[in-house]
Each structure stands twice: as C-alpha cells, then as structure tokens.
Length: 469
Image (cartoon, rainbow, N blue to C red; front, side, top):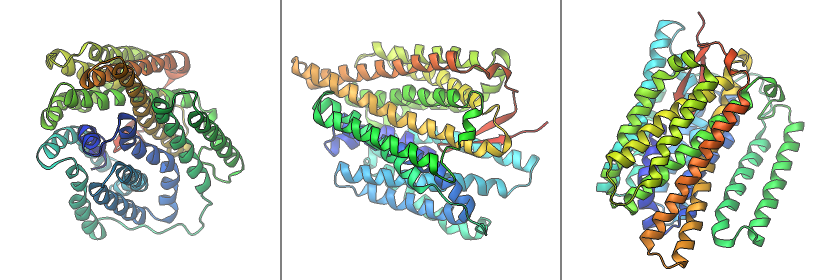
C-alpha cells in the first residue's frame, strides 16, 4: 500500500492540479511534501519504534496514514490536500521501520526468513506496477479522490487483523533521549528550501521573498547543525562519516530520483494534458516500465555488479538512464507511444534502477554491523530528498519556461509542452551530475565484497539484510 502511493499519485497528479486549480509549482507539493516529511522524520521514528515498541508504532503509523488518506480525499482545495499529504508522510515514516522489523521477527533466521524476505520484496515490487494500473482505472472511473480513499479499507482490514496476527513487543526499560528538535529543524529546513524554489517562477530569483526564503533556509540549517553537535543521540552520528563511500553513495541515491522521479511525474503530466491520454491509458502507458524496473533490472543488480564492478555499473547504467530520458526531448503530442514514451521510460527506468542500486551497494558495503540501521536510514533519507527536490526543481523550471512562452504569444497547450520539455532537460541534467558523483566519489566501491548483503525494498525504506556465507 505504501509503495503504491507514489505511483498512484503520479498518475492522479494532473487531475488533482486541474480540479483544484493548482499551478505546476503548487502541485509539486503534493509529491514533495510526502517525500520530505517522510525523509525528515524517518530516522527519528525508526529509533522510536525500537524504544517504545514496534507493534505500537505500527498501529499508530498506519492509523495516521489512514486518517490522512481519508481527509485528503475530502480536500476542498490544494492547501488541505498538501497538508494531508504531509500527514501521510509522517504516518509512513512511523509505520515503515516498524513493519519490516515485525515481519522479520516473525520468522527464524535461515530458510524461513529468506523465503519471507523474498516474498516481501516481490510484493513491494508489485506495488509499483499496481499503482500505475489501478491509479489509471480509479482516476478514469471514480476521480482522483479515489486514489486516497482506496487506502482506507485496506488499512482498516490490516488494523483489524493486527492484534491477533502480529507479535507484540515491550518498550525498552531504559529509554534513550530522542533528537526530536533535530528532526523538526531538518524537516523545516527542507520544506523552506522547496518553498523558496517554488516561489522563483512567481517572484523572480532576486525578489525579496526569494532572498528571504534563502536566508531563512540558511538560518534553519545552521540551527540544525548546532543542535546536532550538542545532541546526545543525533540523527546523523558523526561516526558514520568515517565510512568510505557512504556520503558519495548517498549522493548517487539522491541524484538518481532527482532525475528519474521528475521524469515520471512530468511525463505523466505531458501525456495527459498535452498528448490527450485519459488516466487509464496513461496508467497502462507506464506499466511496462514499472514491470521492467521491478522484475528485470532489480534481479540483475548483483550479476552486473560482479561482472563490471559497482563504480563502473553506476556510470554505465547512469548513461543508459540518460539515453532513455533524452528520448522525451523529441516527444511531440502526436508522437508514437512505442518510439517515445515506451522507449524512454523502459530504457531510462532500467538504467536508473541499476544506477540507484549501485549507489546503495557502494554506500553500505563497508559499514559495520552496529551501524547498518543508521546508515540504511541515511540512504533512505537521500532517496526521499531526491524525490522531493527533483519534482520541486522540475516544477519551477516548467513554470518559468511556460510563463515565458505564454508572454511570447504561445497557446496554453504549447506553453505547457515547452515547460515540460524544460523540466525533462532539468531531470537529464541531474542525471549527468549523478554520473559525475559516481565517477568522482565512489573511490572504494571496487573493494566492496559482493554480495556482502542484499537490499530489501520496503515501500520507500531500504534495509540492509546481512547474508553470511
């Protein structure tokens, strides 16, 4: 359900923006707010689940997510919808780490746990494709509000079964101090930065509002850094910085969705609002790439990494991702689906998935067992940050270009198409930066022991599950 959320909202986004009269820069908050709140609180809530009880946090998080989904479906305007998406992100941050920990605790180490992990990963991968397919069906026949309402019956069923089906754990007797101020200031810093980016198309980069936003962002960042230096249990322990390739791997993991998540969102807008696809056709159009990402690219991660090395895999597959994305620069409203969207998303998605996996492997390969949880949280934080910032930057560029074309006399559709082409170019630029980060930053990836572990996708959280020979 949590993994479906991103892909299903991607298909519904054009309908949400149209019905609620939202601009591109305002509509991007529907995606960015969820990602940023999830990223900002994930490391804190994961520790809370360990301290106060995973079952308790599972129930609390799923309840918050469900209530936010229902209220989001009732949203009378964009502001309420964005607020509920933020609350959904908080619920997901609470339930994500608790859910996988509970699942692993239900099976003994060895073959039973390995089978459970394999099934868990398969279900998660299926969620991406399911979101594309059912998102199109729901929006087409029931409207965009249904993609939020659909969470409610499933979540209620899970909550009803949880008390009898899931093991209950006790809270820790000695509770550690939690860095709540750090998580709050981190999230506030990111939200303020995205808000500042969003204001540029309307106010200009040199306006008082934009400059004030930059100043507030810097102040919040300084306060966050100051709090972290004094915190007993900081969100990012200083010892993590000593691990080779952790930060450069996180950079690759952040830049990959800054490129490809933006492509997914803006391509969905293009085919629905420019090329005239209905939501069902749009969902079906993205389904092949979702299947390739989940069931072709992901299983090839380790064979390719062993064959050419992690650093080379990040660079080569990054080039493949950009090659696919670049096809969209030539897409026109009457372009053939097979030579434009199908080719772009399948090639780009295949390369992007492998580049992302290369960053994960490189960043976590040298981390010691006691720090695996914290390091994995850093990587997941980078992933969510990339989604939020990628969509925000793309939306700002789109609106700037669309406004310029409108002033030059272009029609509304032509201006939108031109703006979306500019957003595609921005996403491709992020991909180029990702390749540079891999080439210059992944200095120790060649010595990674492959496989030292495999990486289990769970919603938008990735845990490192050790596999000892």
